[in-house]
Structure formats: C-alpha cells, structure tokens
Image (cartoon, rainbow, N blue to C red; front, side, top):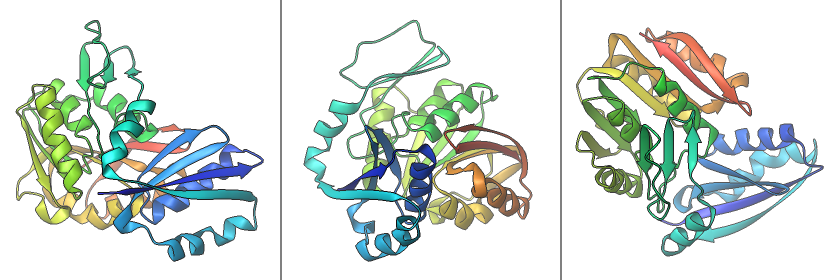
Length: 278
C-alpha cells in the first residue's frame, strides 16, 4: 500500500494553528502526524486520499491564518528508507525502551520492544501511542484477556504481553498492519497475540478484561457499541487518537450509552488518552 505525505507549513508558526489543522485532517482519514521544522507532516493511505474533500475541509482555515502544503506519494518499496532515516529510539518513564532492529539493546530497561514498522504506523513516537503505553504501565494487566483495536505495528499488544496479559487479540483493517503485527510479535518472542485483519466485524464473540483503542474519534464512535458488547463488567477500556476539545466530551457521552464510565485522562499537546470502566 502506498501512502500520501502532506507537508504543512503555517505562517506564523503557532501550535494552535497546527493543532486545528491536524484535528481536521484526522477527521478525514489522516492517521499519523510528524512534527518537522516550520510545520508538520500528515500521512494517509493512498486509497483514502481525496483531494477535493481535503480542500473542502481546509477552506475555513484559509480565512483564519496563512498556510501552505505540498503533496508527495511514498511508494511502499521506499518506506523503509523514510522511517529508518527518522526513527530514533524512545523511552517512557525509564521503564519502556522502543527501538528498531538496527538500534543497540538497552537491557537496563524492564520492557524493551523491537519494532520494524515498514508501512505500518505505530512506533511509539506519536503522543497518542506514548500516552497509551504510559497508562498501561499503571494498569493491572497480569493474566488479562485483551483486545487491541487499530493495532498498527502491534506495539501496544506487545507491551501488554510483556506486562503479563495472557490472551491478546490485535485487529487492524490494513493488511500491512496485520502482517507487521505478526512480524513484530515474532521479533519480540511473543506468541500470545492473535492478529486479525478487519474492523469491528472481526471482533470475536468473546469477553475481554481490557480493550485498547487508539484510532480516531469518528471510528471510535462508530465502534463504541461493539466495544460495550465485548467488554466485561468491571473491565477497562483505554481510548486515544483524539483531542481534548471537543472530542473528549463526545467520547464520554458515546461511551456512557453502552455502560462505559469515564475515569481519568492525560493530555500531551492537546492529544488525549483516557481510561474508562464498564
């Protein structure tokens, strides 16, 4: 699968301007964002890119501030060069170390995760992923049955296994993500993850102790009823992939319809990761 890369530059450079644009792009299918000098990059699968829809959604912002963007396509065969040139190891709380296969090991970290993302997004660099990992460190996942929706590279499922989860289902609609999850599970010596390709329709008819859903607001709302069906009473669900305002209140209201109550959240650069309980 090819991806479109859009590089946005705002004038002057203000965080709130970039946040507004990123939030709007997420609404129309852009799934990963990367800060760069004088702006940011946004990525979307080529099959989901609609130039006319993009322009329609950007119209209000042209009246608010000046920005420009350029569009590039990244062929699948070139993706390794892109992420290898940009992928630096990350650390979370001196407990989690995420690296690529070409980075040195750091055995002093209790949880080391090796990720070979290829065309699948989810290296832990984005705020939503790193916040989810941070929340997981405080969760009791030992022997828990878990569901990871929008698993990307499988990074959250892999961490769940390292934190003691015994039975993990990881789902993504993108075949590249599905394959990446399998490959990365093997890289990390994990055999407790069952990867599935699809969306809410492939969620097994089982009950889960914990659900991880790091996607975007619209997809979370669309899938919320199904989450409520498969989450055990007393179980926890962790959401991310959206902004604090106005998205968090929308997520709270939708989750409440299916018996899932807001507990807490954390925020980084307006992105939110939130914990709910049924």
